[in-house]
Length: 277
Ligand SMILES: Nc1ncnc2c1ncn2[C@@H]1O[C@H](COP(=O)(O)OP(=O)(O)OP(=O)(O)O)[C@@H](O)[C@H]1O
Image 1: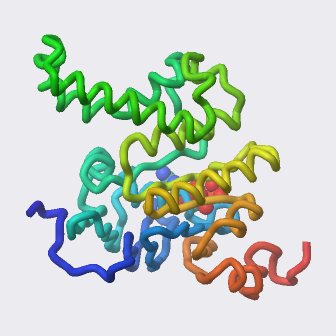
Image 2: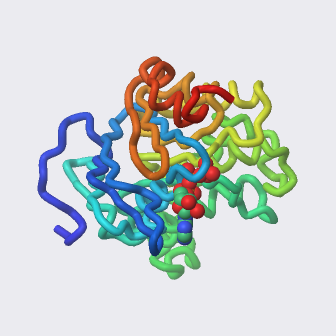
């Protein structure tokens, strides 16, 4: 068992346990003693005004930043438990199977839509190719792995309604399609937890509604947990099972969308002290 795997028994439905997380940048405390649990088969919304610490939280979970203090425990499959704050970003993706999308879309714009999804499965294919040798000789196990990767890519292209543009350069797609392609690419890595940073940014109301359906179907069909940073309240209130609210790096509330909508501290954080804007 590696140093980053702990032998604690998880509550059955706990996927990620964030305990007393703090992230400082010099004198600035971007995340201040934040704790919450994200559950399996649930969408956990993370909301808060600009600068509240939402992206910093994602960057700690996905290994971009090492938290100053705190523990991030991911309860994976088969009883494996990963202490994410001790792992680098690559292993968080590969071993703990945490995938993410970014606020600013990061696709390989010159590659085709299908190629973007094949590249996402590069590590699995490299392993199957015996780091090139078996691939060069067209070994059956490599050919099978390649076929499986293509099938998975096609599955996600169908699910995200991008199959008709599979051969087009990713950079030529309309914005809403690029956002769905990012989600398809993340799902091709077989995550157990998917972190989405403002997936509805720049979408029109119809595209936002489509996104809601896609995220709900990912939760329901694949049983994974989703962490969702989002400013679009029609998305976050419409599909979250649980919402955590940050303000100036602190957790100021958590609960169901209904709880959050009526929480005085949340209303104050969004509208200012007087509750007027
Ligand atoms: N690498 C960094 N170095 C210094 N300060 C940082 C760094 N990353 C974030 N911050 C600061 O931490 C605070 C929280 O930023 P963060 O981007 O996490 O907020 P956010 O809630 O995601 O905001 P938004 O909704 O605008 O994206 C901000 O004051 C930001 O300037």
